[in-house]
Amino acid sequence: MRLFSPVPLLLLTFALGAATLPAQRPSSSSSSSNRQDESAQEPQQPSSTVVRRAVEASGSAVSLETSETLFTMAAALNSCGYDNGIESSLPVRAVIRAEMVQAVGAGFEAKAAHDTTCTYIDAHKQPGPRNLAQYVSLALFLSAPPDFALSVGEGDLPPDSQNVIGVLPLLRDFAAKAQLHRIFMRHRAEYEDAVLQVHDSLTRMLLETNIYLHQPVSSYDGRRFLVLLEPMLSPQAVNARIYGTDYFIAVSPAKIEDPSISKTSPGSRMSVSDRAAGVQMDQIRRMYLLYNVDPIIYARAGATNRLLPLLKTVSDAPIDFTYKSDIVALTTECLIKAIEARLMDVGFAKPSKPGAVKARTEIDTYNQALIDYDKKAEAVRRKQVLLDMESGWVLTGSFYDKLAIQDREGVSLKESIGEMVYGMDVPSEVSHAKKIPFFAPDSTNLVAGAGITHARSPRRSLSTIDQAELKLQKGDRTGAEELAEKELAANPTSGDALYIMARVKLTQGDPQAAYDRFTQVIATSKDPRTVAWSHVYLGRLYDTQTGNSRPKAVAEYKAALSTPGIQQDVRAAAEAGIQKPFAAPKRTVQDSDQKPDDEEELDPTGKKQKESYKPSEEVKPTAPRR
Image 1 (tube, rainbow, N blue to C red):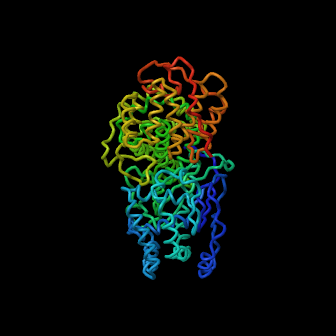
Image 2 (image 1 turned 90 degrees about the vertical axis):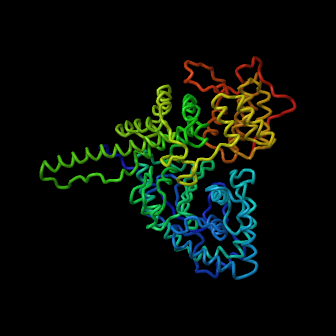
Image 3 (image 1 turned 45 degrees about the vertical axis):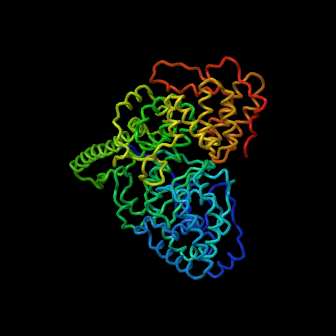
């Protein structure tokens, strides 16, 4: 058995009160006189109480917090009929709901503000978990009460939160009239108890994960991992978000006896002690793994292009479209699932090593019990890996085996990632993946990905744009173009459709048309990822021109980097473009399974053109965005 070298535990801070969430959010150090008057009537407490446990800092910005901003949003939803998980929630949720009913009934103004807010919320309902998710997303970009001011421009908000931005003036009015700040302050003790309930299990999970990954002690690198506890939400709901370099996950503790939390569901990696915390610790671990694995994979995202043939093998798999169209996302999720399988609770205890041994037979008995345990545990883990692969996560088995080698050699994931991912025998993996029998989309055995807002959300149907993207990935440029044109006929300013069209034009050898459409995307799209990638493509187009176009290319790469909410793969591509000019890769096809049909898109100049591309005089590159 390998002994891991000790790794210091992450620092966990517990900020009770109005937590400041996104990194760019301004601090709300002052409040209105009305707010001060209300607070004066409450027991005197500091605006933010910090509770620290006896743990060591490892330099990582990891925190467990509660937020009055998220509380206010969740309280409004509860007041307007959000009852999900009420039977398994902590008792404080029912108490606060009763207090809000009393506050709303106490006067005409509070009742009017409540009714107006509820009318808006009812009119903006979304199906399933998306309804809650849009409000959680918005809350993450708001300052503390009573202002609830946006911390970024409206156009830079996540797309789902833009759907409900109109709730903000109503929320301010309802919070003031129903005195939600006073209610929150009244229950600070219960919120602190909720944090303490989760603390030990979260600490143990972080320590175990860090030891397995051989996390080095490092200084703060500007990234954050934030676990938000909000008892007014359903304990069954888990909302995970990635905004730029910040990773958020919002959860709600459940009553300990809640069976839906305490029992192990198929595919769960929770231990008994973790379930005792009343939160879905396996989902928090998954997000924390993503926080650690993302930078390692995206640091060399371009090198994963050789893995693109694997996307064809999962085109019919019952996984979300994101993973069918993004090889980096698919690779990352498969690696995370392999790590989870290595760390999962197998359902039975490992034999305890005898203490003061007097007889040789005791050592022999222990060694045999350990051998039996390892065989039995490996069978459980292998079964989980099989479920993962038949759910569409085709590389899980390969990564699981390579992690075993890493474990024996005692090296970190960062050290072994090169051989594990970039040294992969792609033809062999493609051949193996083609033989995997996938579950049906409605199978109860499906293992979901990390991008879900609930532990088991239903598989969504593909939109027109999703279908176009999938056709483009499969090399069906004509089909992708037809679907994009259909979308543009219904919505002429659809940034997603224009982005599809631009990439189609690249593969057809028409860079001027591609340039025009990428420029339109930047001018019209509200999706930061699409906008950032369009800047990268424009930079590459300039790099492939004759003449002195390098400064214009660098300007586009810098514009991509300055796009709010930029993700690691876009950042890596933009930084690579700044370091040296883009050069179109040479196409070398040895086998039809080696390269996807749409690999021509990797060359933004289009391989069929013979003359260098020059943008038209009428269309100029956009200035770098803030």
